[in-house]
Length: 590
Ligand SMILES: Nc1ncnc2c1ncn2[C@@H]1O[C@H](COP(=O)(O)OP(=O)(O)OP(=O)(O)O)[C@@H](O)[C@H]1O
Ligand SMILES: [Mg+2]
Image (cartoon, rainbow, N blue to C red; front, side, top):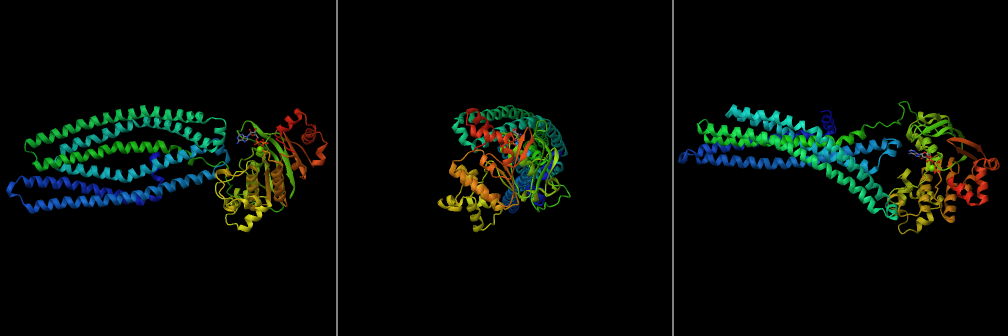
């Protein structure tokens, strides 16, 4: 019951229009009641033979004709309103879902496949919309239709009305009894659909990998396995439903047998006029409709409940990272960043960062060096508050980042991610992602500083070139430079540079390095360095080992300390196979 209330509440802003639809359908069903009555009168009049009044008959025929036209017009108005409603409801629900998803922290997306997220949305919206439409089109009509038909039948014969009345509780009871099992089947089906669609989306997104490893068939098999499960579960589910439905209708058949028997026998005893008997039979037939509607109502309701469960589950996920009620705007004055005793683990058991303290002085450039998987990117994730440290404090100009709004924090930091994540759309849109109203001059000057202007200029459509999903149509070095231009245009006082580990050829490498230098100018920068040349150019090097800071110092100081950095330098000079292997562990290129 709670689920149904929740479903109906989803469409609160549309209740008014649903009400209008409901009222119109009631009018339609009342009009439907008049036709059998007119028919009954006509038959009784016909029985008078030649005495029958022709004009009266004509009026009855005209009455039926007008009722038909009225029903025709009203039905189409209802259909039109229903269309408008369902599209609006669709918009409301999907916007809410999207907005909510965008507010969820990174941890949520680490767990979920994007294909699943979308599959859930589609399924839920279709079902909730169907449900609301059914409610407006059938529910009121069902209630009013039933009450009115029964009242009219009772007027002719209370015995028949009583027999018909007995049907409802039996029918509803039987239908609800089978609902739980049906829903369990449905949830199981949905689970497999989600798994299949999650993988589907993932493999299409990384189609190159699938093809290069020749795994198209395996991906298809994976999909088929889960699709087969859905087919397999559907069989007992559907069988279950239809067996139950046959039983339910059997009871209906028996009761109607009683009703007809009663009308026929009593009719033969002269209890009703032929016209009354016909009208009664027509009413009894009309009442079958709402009774069948019960199955339809219940089936739709349980489908809506089962299929929207995941939607509400997502909507109920509370963002674990939220602005405090008293959160202030971050005010960056000098741009000094400090990590103080920061500890963190992704899964709350295996710590990745075990107490890191480091100071990035205002305007300073600090390189983070450590083996792959040591937690360098993680530290920047914490700085951006994608995750929250379990211990310790991160602050910017003395303000704890947990005490300021996430928006103001992120506004103050430009990031160049390890993987240059671009969007489909034009180069201009990508560079101007931080500020879509940026002028051509601004976009161009960011591109120039990022060493990207030259290659963009040579493209057929220049800045208006479409770059494909995630920038698929650009080279690795081009993507990196667009990502740098994007960060430049954001023009934030702090900069996080997660150097790409993929090595570029020396020319584009040089261009990227140059671009980065311009980007760092005048900003406090935290660089996750994967190149010795980058490390050599910073003010301070921080090396990480075992989730802790190992050494801190200028590149000159650390060159001979015997620590990670000096080892790296020695390895670089060494060039034995073992040296190169060790260098690889750091993902360090020259
Ligand atoms: N979203 C995540 N969920 C769970 N574990 C994660 C997640 N991201 C990273 N890790 C784990 O945390 C550790 C640190 O990862 P991180 O990405 O910070 O390494 P890194 O130092 O940046 O490495 P690299 O130099 O290869 O980029 C790794 O062991 C990794 O397996
Ligand atoms: Mg990393």
